[in-house]
Amino acid sequence: MANKLEIRDLWAEIDGSPILKGVDLVVPQGEVHALMGPNGAGKSTLGRVIAGDPSYQVTEGEVLLDGENILQLKPDERARKGLFLAFQYPLEVPGVTIANFLRLALQQRFGREVPLSEFYNKLQKAIEVLEWDESYVTRYLNEGFSGGEKKRNEVLQLMVLEPKYAILDETDSGLDIDALKVVSKGVNAMRGPEFAALVITHYQRLLNYIVPDVVHVMVDGRVVKTGGKDLALELEERGYDWLKAEVGA
Ligand SMILES: Nc1ncnc2c1ncn2[C@@H]1O[C@H](COP(=O)(O)OP(=O)(O)O)[C@@H](O)[C@H]1O
Ligand SMILES: [Mg+2]
Image 1 (cartoon, rainbow, N blue to C red):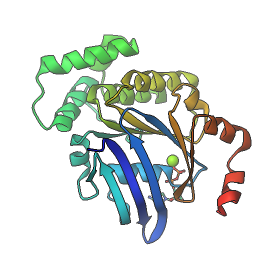
Image 2: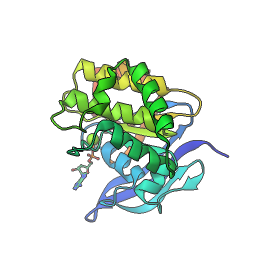
Image 3: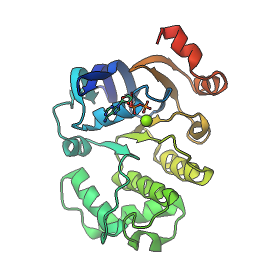
């Protein structure tokens, strides 16, 4: 069976106005791909549609996870299949510790009770890789957290949940170098034959730390160019206008 995340001719709209206009994209297991493109191209929308955000109406196309079309599945069912969308939910849950939240998320991910010992093993491993202080996870979820700390949380979540396919939507608003390093450390630690990621970013900066196997560029609701990691550097240097002109957008 084909182990990959495959988007085929995906069209999606919100309130009748089309945003995705025939996206084709393949991310095979074991690879990390970057999705770049100018603001408003539809990158975040693509991430949300893959994850199952009900605000968008899919009017055509398929999202195949290991060959299975997941478009009819609810977001939590998609998560159970190993899909993970990060950096979209800066949620604050007063009174819930990071550890408790993670255990709940893990149980949802695997659809079964996860024994404390198993959970703590995973948590311990993640904290070690990230070189964090253990006391950190007994804090309350995002309550009074800085942007960088929220980012850490999301990375911890990624590592504990061990998704097969992760979509990381890096918001374009000023992530400092420390946060970039945290994100990349987590993602790079996850790299392996059974992990694939689509890293969405407007700027090339993040890709200095997470070196992608493949770079896709989205313009006006479609993937218009795919290349190697050098494509990101070229875009950094030349901007997006030449590409827009090339595709007549
Ligand atoms: N919830 C929404 N309501 C209305 N318009 C939206 C919504 N989400 C996205 N859009 C529009 O879709 C286009 C693509 O947005 P987005 O996916 O956020 O692009 P990108 O992430 O590439 O910057 C933009 O024109 C944006 O205004
Ligand atoms: Mg975006």
